[in-house]
Amino acid sequence: MHSGIIGLIIGVVVGVVLGVTILTPKINTHTASKSIVTERDLDTETNNNFAPLPTLHDGDVIHWRSAPPFPSDRPNVARQASEFSKNLSVITGDKIILPVMPAKEVIAADRLFGALASGRIDALFSSADIALDKEPALALFSALPFGPRPQETLSWLQAGNGTKTLQSIFSKHNIQALVCGYLPPESSGWFVNEINGTEDMKGLRIRINGLGAKVWEKVGAIVTPMSPENISSAFDQGTLDAAVFSTPKVDAKSGFSRFAKNYYFPGWQNQGQPLLLLINARAWKRLDEERKSLIKASCDQHTALSQANAAQQQFSGLSELTKQDVALLRMPSFALNRLREAWAVVLGEEARRNPIFRTTWEDLKSFLKTRKTWADMGYIEDQELDY
Image 1: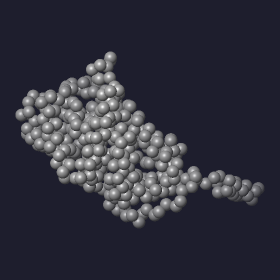
Image 2 (image 1 turned 90 degrees about the horizontal axis):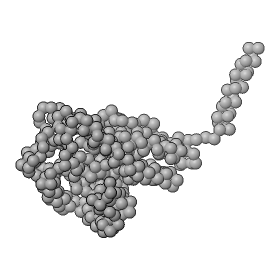
Image 3 (image 1 turned 120 degrees about the horizontal axis):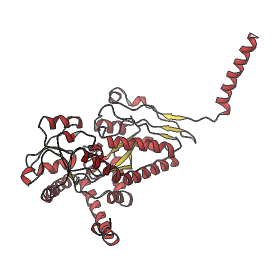
Image 4 (image 1 turned 180 degrees about the vertical axis):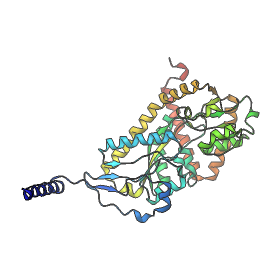
């Protein structure tokens, strides 16, 4: 009896092993790691950790090594990254896994970019300014002062030379770039006091990044760089007069309304910007055409959906701000005119400083002129709309 039970158990084990190894089709998982890279990982790991992956076969799973989205301190970027990751798994039938988790720490742009370029991570959900210090022309794909509306930028990227130029810039760093989402326009920022004259702009202590910071400096403001977590304390201590952070939906949860009750529009310094899926070139080349097509389709779908959903999401943010007794104000025309004049100066300086910036700007401007010709002919003016 005892020997019979042992024999039965052995028979079941052998049957399971045979079923798994012979009868069940084998699905390989190609992976460098199934974890999100942290800043400590970047300090300790070397390229030797990542051996070349074998040839792909039908049914194989790509499990990319990733990192928290850049910028790590922007919840709207992290939210879109998470949404895209889920949709990518669905569209590819779980053939491509891009792990995305909220950042527990802010990882500097240069560290993330270096890890991606070297292959220490395979893919990263990001904005173009991740490599702004290395490639100034990427500012034209990021927060562009007085830039075109989202639909115009997307047209340039998809129907003009935008994506081609973007890829040529990232190719120099061993990276494949795909437009993969869109951030809506920001506000002009939070202000402790109202702007009633150009004299209120001089000496204004403001937190703002990117090209918009250079514009504010031209009109005499004091630009004060700081991380988002320090904005509230700076307002509270009286060392900050204004701050640009994000879109209304994100700003409504920031807590800044406790210190600054004047919330200005439009976000002239950032009229919306594309998000990118950046992939190490070696990891991209390893993919077959089916997987490449599925990734591109996933990005196109996510870009369209993020743009379509933006207006309703930001309206809900505005509604929440009014409940916090925040005044929604329009930036005075004299202020916008002064900022636009300053932007023309900054734009000229950037164009003279960097030839790629100059040629990219000229191409964008040329494309927008042709689009305007059609828009003027084909669409009803805003004031003529019956709603």
